Image (cartoon, rainbow, N blue to C red; front, side, top):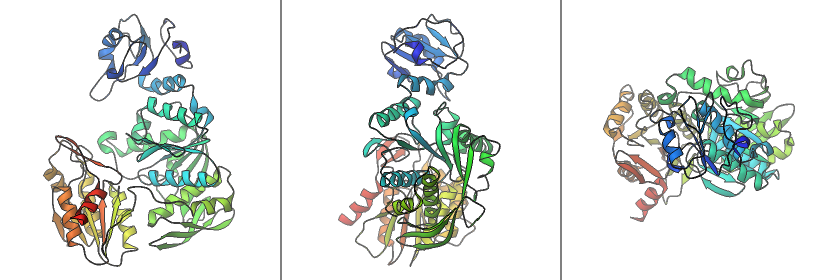
Length: 475
């Protein structure tokens, strides 16, 4: 492909020679003969510093933000901002042939995207999915490294979806991806907002920055669907040009309202009130399943799908790995794995389990290292206040000492009388919890969810909590 084709629609500030390009990348380790290298300044590495070396490796040109004094440089105002459209051009702008549905918010994105995908497939559509657990092209699964991929990987997935005949793509859109321009230039048919609570402040620094990053999604969509039970639900779409639809539990002023909610171990049921009234049955238990399924159903109906057929379709949906996932055990108690790793997420899952628990709710959890430290005591307080017993352990400590993270958590647990057991090694903690669980208990393993690894100071190890539980009972 010619450089001029790859740079179509991008403002270039200097003259350049129109050469043939084999591939594009912003990763200096991947550059080969015939590549176009995009110089991006990150937190710890600046691609501008190796631009000359990339030309020496055979790159046909480098895209940069300033004059580097190089013969084959392409100067733009913001190289990070143009990386996404460059990748889109390289792959032939595949998202133009897809109806994109983007979800953003602190909690609920993963489960809701899966429910939307399942609803649309039950309605006869071929659907792609991009998110935290995995990426999918129809039924074909591709591994997910980030919630929202790097622009090159994202556009390559769009290309696969378009070539496979997908009509829709449902994707989680993270705040980091929005802030870093990974979806720059991508237009969404519909964008949905779930909720906003404290998370990722290690990256965004302030809640205001976090909010503004999320808001970027709604500046490039036709329709915005937002949860007005969240205090930021209307604020996030305020003053924007898109058409706005709202959903809520009990607020009859919303476009889609869930009323008369019933909870059971088998799922949730409620009346959906819009311009019609129907009964929704979602086979995923928990209070947050009301919001997740309500959002998903509202998406489908807003997109024009038949009301009754949509309600029948959501009744056939199923769970998501690592989200209120019941682990098979030969016991008289229940083991549940959930990805809850923020204060709000942990509170939601414990409250949901309390609604169906016949015995104690025992919560085993930790907090990630090298991440927002302020949420650790908050999570400790929530777990202790809402659980009958807590086991504090390690999560992904990364470069931090696990004991330091645990001490931060314990600070928030001092004001409660809930029994707390500290076991630093997560495998040992799970085994202890299984040995000491009682009849009718619900044992919640929180924080890891779908992850099959643990990030330690000396590297990443394989760690799948399902295997730990299974091995315990084998022994």
